[in-house]
Image 1 (tube, one colour):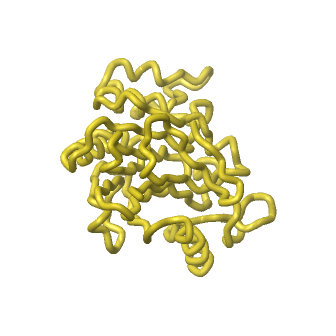
Image 2 (cartoon, one colour):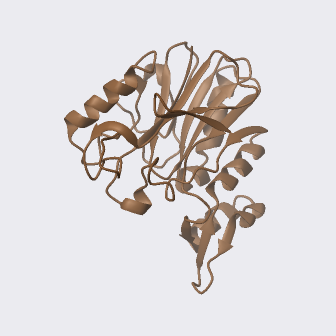
Image 3 (cartoon, one colour):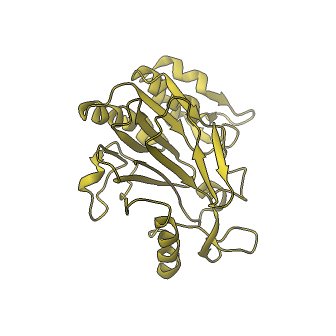
Length: 257
């Protein structure tokens, strides 16, 4: 589940069991300074946070400054490469190549950017460790969620909760046989997350949230919330690379208060 903060124009995760000392949010498309094609799609400014997508640097800087006012510190931005590397957010300075981070110190902000890939936020039930992972299909198949969970447990996390943010939905994520094989080779049950596309041999619709839930369950994470928000179908709230190609990036962030 999740709640929409209209004043701040963000999604606030509503995950049962998350301790009160955890702060988290996921940004949306509208409400910023970015101009077309990074705007809100309705004639207003877009809240693009990606510096690597061709947007005007000054507009992105203004958007990031606006985001900063909602946070206790600068986010630990990553250079995401669809991999499975996890870093300690406390040591992040100039955007290392990684697709997940964790934190144990109050005020350190884990952050990932998405525009169809699945953002996954984590916290432990004691409120001592948090994490954030960028789960495109390659990272998901490559173990980015498992690696994030392992890093959190190594840092002292007990029971871990997860929240699935906005991502491409199961009616929009068309993939080929290579993607199906990548997951079925890991777990035969993953076949249930793929639906053949009628009249298109070798093409399937993939349910990335279902795949993530399966990977999380295998890793021992039973409390999983969120999901069900399709970035492709909801152009008023979300950027989508698959829908628009040239587009902005949203961010999902988590920290210990």
